[in-house]
Length: 293
Image 1 (cartoon, rainbow, N blue to C red):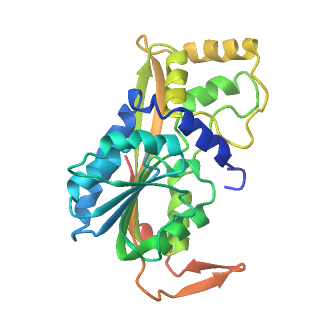
Image 2: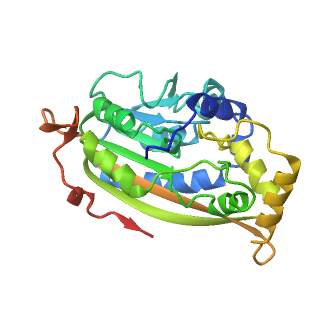
């Protein structure tokens, strides 16, 4: 994970610019949202406080408020323009609150959250100990964390097309399910269960995929990306390499989606020091039930 570094300012800027166009391109995000809502069937209580981290335009927040009408639902996002857009989903009958904040520094008290939900946001955070440590901090004992994120096979065709042209980084990288599971256990989260699904979306041309990524704000944000403008010749060579992958008249793009849930640890859970830090005393066997589809 050491070479996985995200430019958080670039991520915030990308999503801020995409606030007005996001919902024209979010079909996959809505599909994955349904997978997360299904996981809520494991949560058997009535929550008092539900937070939606990386809420974007607020579609997921509205669905959470619809499900838990009596709960306080808070949409949290680092991009203020996204939260302004989310107001359109916060109806007066079922309103939710909107708060600007980072996933690694949530503006919430310790152990104050019953359900922490995040749909396709965590892939933009490279500090997993800080991320899951913050989840543990705000979750009540026995509270539920459920999230989705992109896995390393996401956009593999676009990555391969660029790799045929040069050795620079042009496509964001994403972490494997096992890296995520290890980090969840190390943070002290209980009984994590992770699944992997793959979606194959197709496009009329490579540029249509690039337009969608820009419209979503999901453009390249690794710190190792090439800072200068990509030359027109290189860009055309990449498009030609991608065109060679055309199948049945369409351009394919793989999206690997990891969905996961886990539980807030009980009060006073024992932890043991390791390498100057602390990790929870659970074995990798706690990842029971995890699977790939």
